[in-house]
Amino acid sequence: RFDGLLHCLRATVATSGVCGLYAGIGVSVAGIVPYRGFYFGLFDTLSAFDPYTDRGVAAKAASLFVCAQASAVLAGYIAYPFDTVRRRLQLQSCQPPDDRVYRGAADCLRKIVTEEGALALFKGANMNAIRTVGAALVLVLYSEITDAMAAT
Image (tube, rainbow, N blue to C red; front, side, top):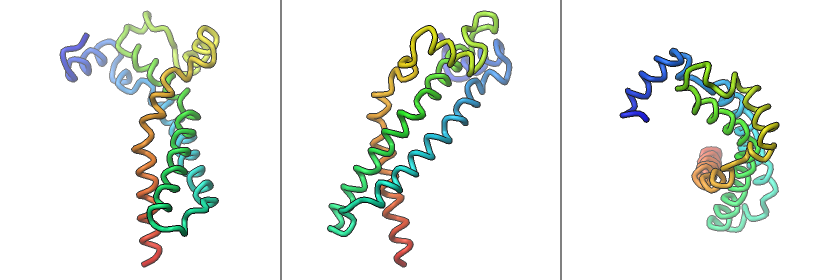
């Protein structure tokens, strides 16, 4: 449909104006709050109850990774409906305004739930959960670096 990035940008601006480049930004911002809240909050809670923190470097790192992976997966599932709405808004941003299915985030959410069912908000969430391994590694590194800095 597009010949490249510049063609996509030009087409989006031509059909939707500059605001079309930011379709779904409100939903993205609204979704990052619960995602990061659960991501860090659950990790801190789980790691506080981790019984393996004093059983060697390998055991500590492995148990922290389990805590981090569980936190990242759960946070991803909690925030995934925001991603679904954002993606759908972005996919229609190149269409002329009269041809769009959704008038905004609330309309998109309502139509998805009423026409497809609430589970449609989670289409693709399992694949997203697989991608959380990197996020879990970041949490483990973050924890280890802050512990090392606190020890000095």
